[in-house]
Length: 157
Length: 207
Image (cartoon, rainbow over all chains, first blue to last red; front, side, top):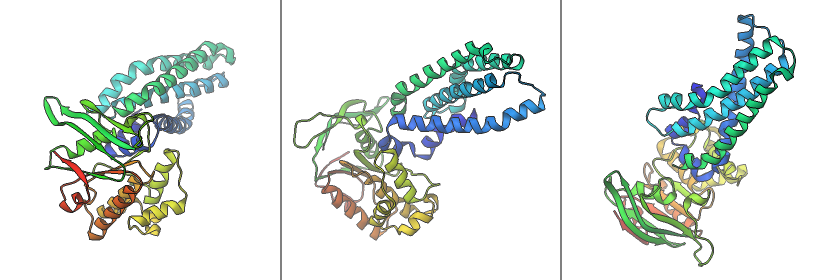
């Protein structure tokens, strides 16, 4: 999460945000940041998830459901974190403000992902977690749409 | 394109930085902005580029021939060039990679020879421009890269804020050449305290 919050801060602090504002369409900037954060999340997950499963002796009965929860949960986490990072990038108390703004936004996908993981631990059927997946997909859709609609104002102010 | 400033004011809280200012910058002209340190030259340039919102008034771009829609600097990207002390490019990229990156994100990619030519125009060795990361260049060489960036997209209006800072005499000649090339393409707004740079201006405002 700390890494995700840095995505726009590094541009503002490094002075590269201004040339980006002059040359790149805002949507392209947001898309690039979301994709880079998703890649970062994916790489971290590729190491942390197997390690967690091994160390905690945590067995997954429904691997497809678990992977779907990881995928859609990660997209929601990445999209929401990136957008909040853009909002706090120009503020003085970036770290504290990021936590305050991100926590309520990230609670729904986190709760859904925990629920989905619990179901995947005991039930091998993908359909058992269909409601959770639907919720995560809806959250991802809403968050990405809101981010792209609002980013122009956030980026240029 | 013609740049129009209409009753432009910028204030931070109760402190007015400048304004109200109204002027027009026609293509082929150099508009000078002079003033003491802290007089608001850099802020004015940032307001004109759309990087900072004015407290009141507006900045517009309109076709010099008349007719056509009037737009603001925030309505699009790639039409304005900017070189200023605040500008920073990616230190981990080489100068050529920086130019290629910003051209690509603007949707107007440049080929490698074109990026090399742009660097050569500002007096940078293209081989060095492809092999040395920007953060390892001297401040004068970085200033030259900034000048190359500012004209990369052939802007309608070029904003130069203290363009000669950290440059030697050869570098100052590069600034004059950049201004001359831009005059053939569009307008220039030049903010400076240096009389030699301000001598390039054909009209202007003192803050």
